Length: 179
Length: 250
Image 1 (cartoon, each protein chain N blue to C red):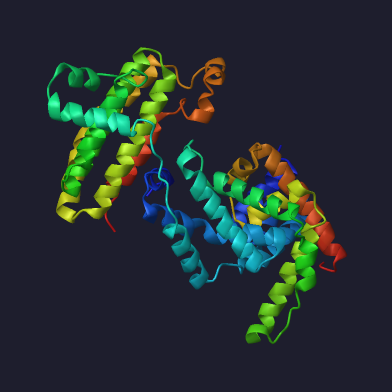
Image 2 (tube, rainbow over the protein chains, first blue to last red):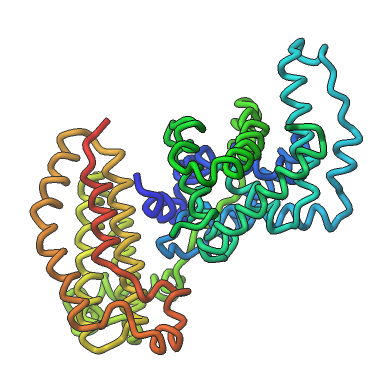
């Protein structure tokens, strides 16, 4: 079913259609938020908030031939910004983390968790726009065009931003000992 | 000549399609060193987040909570009590009378148009099979197409946009009924739709003759058309919906 008719059904009050939209985007929205504030319960709660806000503004949403992702990820961006405004910080999240090999009994899991934390920490060295493009492209797995729509920029501008973001990330990773 | 930004995006797309880093680098030997470092950073970022996902039980709980909330579906302006009340009275008392006929021919923006839409809503609320409901939605979509044609002749792109949005909603609702009906009924509906599609296409194509598409920039700006979806390629939108409606059953 096309995204357009899914939206029209959801707008007409079809809860199943809304459920399909949630299932299609829930993980990607969560990964996007986790890339900004770190994974865990807070990210899960914010993810739920994104869908609540979307549900509230659905009656006024007008399909303009663009993927729904542009709308949902701009709501997610605002939710994260509000969260930051309330004083939450990535540093606080990282300070709370204590990767333990016993947790879930998997050494590999602890290693992956560590790597993710390093990447999240390195992302903190990038400009906000660079962080955004990395989160949209590699955490939320949006295409370049979708990311451009979510960021309300041209594809060319986002392509250039993606390049500068990866250059900056590479530099930060090197300084953290990743060669 | 391709810039490093273009080359990087090309390589990311190739990796997404299953190519290896080596293949990408071989395609751009002059940029291989810089490219290799950037692709490594990209793959680290991707790998770091790829394992993250919501626990299935949490996802189910959130979905349940979201769907259990009071759901305020879009309530069109015309679906107000007054319009429904007028329509009900008219349907009962004036069946076939002059006012009903006048409302039937009204166009978006005209005083009796609200009564026309409310009358249709009443028709939709009458009991009937899913096939009958889907067929009625199809008729109403056709009625919107006819309105779009009249409005395009009158050079009213904004009103064409409004009628177009409603056409899309009727077809989406027809699809909803289609999904819920049995195979024989679904086949009957699809056959009917296939038969009528050429006429729909012709009508939507004609729109472009009466209204320039896309609208010239000053007109678009004056109408805020991009925002309100009035400057749409309705022919293309119809094709997308048609494809979705006619797709084979799983």
